[in-house]
Image 1 (tube, one colour):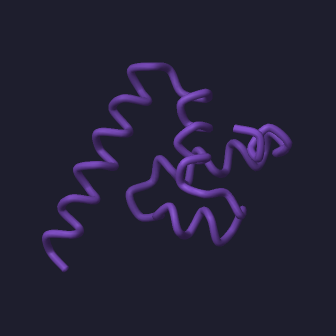
Image 2 (cartoon, helix red, strand yellow):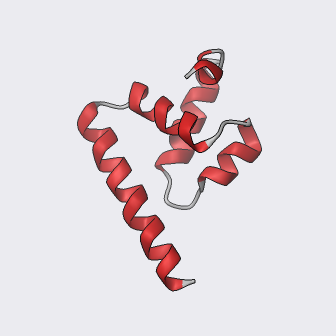
Image 3 (cartoon, rainbow, N blue to C red):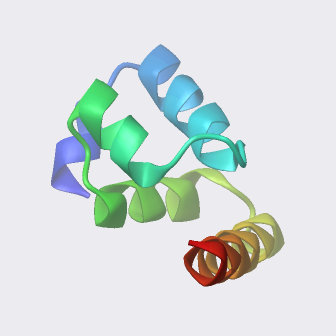
Length: 71
């Protein structure tokens, strides 16, 4: 998580809020903050409680599968 350690706390909060939103994709976060998907996932793992992180990952996976299906 080297790239995300140097982020100011307000950026971390904004990234977490963006990642929790169903309307913002990893590409949007990378475009705005320059942080790749794997770093966002690592940041979320370090920031959220374990159960919240698992729920978020399941939702992201399910949403991504549905999005691919409807394209």
